[in-house]
Amino acid sequence: MGFYSSPYVNNKSVSWNLLKKLGQDRNHPWLVSGDFNEIMYSFEKYGGIPREESRMAAF
Image (cartoon, rainbow, N blue to C red; front, side, top):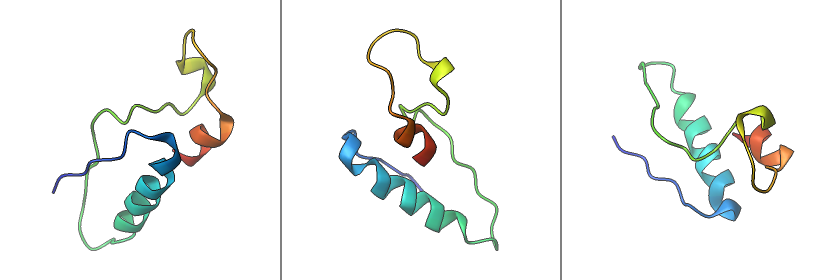
């Protein structure tokens, strides 16, 4: 199965909620990988505009 998330910040929560819902099926193993264009911690970002804490927490 493939998964494509919107590149727009205001639509990211829909993508993360969908992945959470798909992950609730504990009957089958699954792996999610790829470039999510997101970070979990502020120390992972160098330069540019700081990432919002709420975006990192949602990811």
